[in-house]
Image 1 (tube, helix red, strand yellow):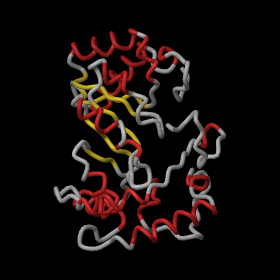
Image 2 (cartoon, rainbow, N blue to C red):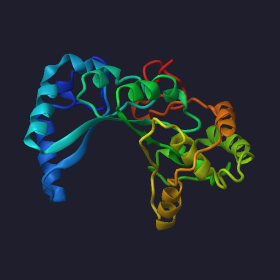
Image 3 (cartoon, helix red, strand yellow):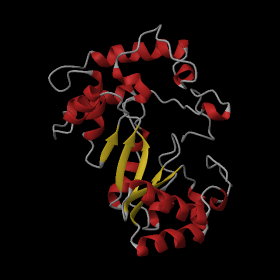
Image 4 (cartoon, rainbow, N blue to C red):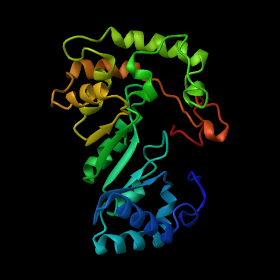
Amino acid sequence: MKWPAFKNIPISEVFPNDWIEKCVDDSLRSLGVDHLDLVQFHVWQDDFIDDDGWKNTIQKIMKSGKVRYWGISANDYQPSNCFRAIDTGLISTIQFIFNIFHQKPTEKLLPYAAKNNVGLIARVPLDEGGLTGTMVVDTKFADGDFRQHYFSSDHLLELVTRTDKLKTLLGHEAKTLPELALRYILSWPEITTTIPGIRRVKNAQTNTSVSDGHKLSIKLMQELKNHVWERNFNNDHGHDPWLASSNYIEP
């Protein structure tokens, strides 16, 4: 097996058909349930569509009743690299990076998914912690924490400068930066849900409290367009994560 899904690598080498079935059976056994509501392919290339094997496999699994819906976790910063998959009618959800800094999905993915009745799961809503508002210019990360690279010194300084500007927008619509970040995402009607990382009970309580149906005003949503900060993180492949490489980020 090969992972992640680089272009021109066939899906049979990333998600072999027997592996898909094994993962489903292993998950059913581990969870002690008779079916899974949603199974997502983690990483994706739309040229996978040219192989009918995986399509036949997931349809067989669905007919068996083991899985109700299938989804795709789109590659980092490639929110449109799933449209052909959506067109098959076999994919019910798309998980993708979306936050105040990375707003590109609003251009194509959100309207396309809405048109095709596909659910949208926004990941990295707090920009790996950058939009929590807790980082300062001398914040340190433990060895092995990928944020050592994501928020290296120069990038951390830029982050703090940008989050300080965002904090000037706080008020009655959003009292904290995390609340602003989550409400921004949930204010888009096309979005089904968002999945912030949660390590503490307090964070779980405050994050879920944002799901109260209160959306940001049109004026504030327009203002947040001025805070786009497009970057790319893919340290696993030896690239500077903050360079918009054409191999990893949509133009």
